[in-house]
Length: 117
Image 1 (cartoon, helix red, strand yellow):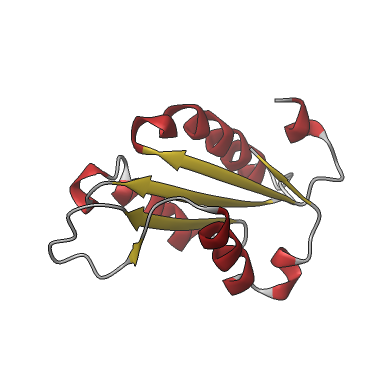
Image 2 (cartoon, one colour):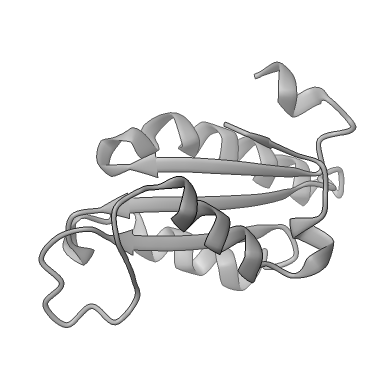
């Protein structure tokens, strides 16, 4: 995780699907630890694809973290399959979809130096 210690990285994009969230959890925990010490100056953007909303691992944790740490943590859950009563974001991962997320971010984030992980 060398990029985490690089002081020029202002935004970290985490792209995960399903159980692929596992390695991202540690990266988010690292940033949370830094934030609690007042040492985190990066924004973390988690885009997380799942087939259904019931498949979103730790959904309540991510949503709570957004409430508590909205200055640096942003969470975009996306459903790709059976939608049921899902009213959130939909679609399969694509560069166009990711660019759409970036375009919706505040300009101070979308124009920052970012490294995709």
